[in-house]
Length: 202
Image (cartoon, rainbow, N blue to C red; front, side):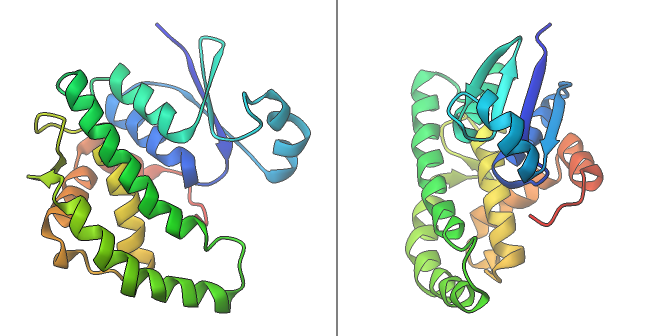
């Protein structure tokens, strides 16, 4: 049986999708969390490209948050129904990541600038991008998985849950997205993880 070590800061951030996948799959792993000082003094030099998160599988290091999520999804049966399904899921994943990139720009800016960017996101980005991704969600799942839970569902859940709770976006205006968020959060293993995971600022 393979051994897994996931390395990231003590935050949900870019590692949380992988953690949720592990939870759903019921697979044990080492959730290695570090502070900024430890990252700079130790883990940065050990990571494949000097970035986090990274995953170690039986001694081999894998980089990239979405690449890790894709690998784990395929490994644990949370992927497409076939290769074409995986490609369809991958396209949706890229689009979801593009939505998330708008939020990433808000880190490290002043409160005034963040408020301005958040308002622009809610007023412009959401009505532009949410209807597009909703077309690729059916019965609570991103199209491509054959109607079962996939790693892209988990990616979408993580992002849209943040957007609805922290940015005041009403997902009831996008019923398929709301159904996806509610469905993923109600999965027993995921629900247990959400309720028991370490409390962090982000």
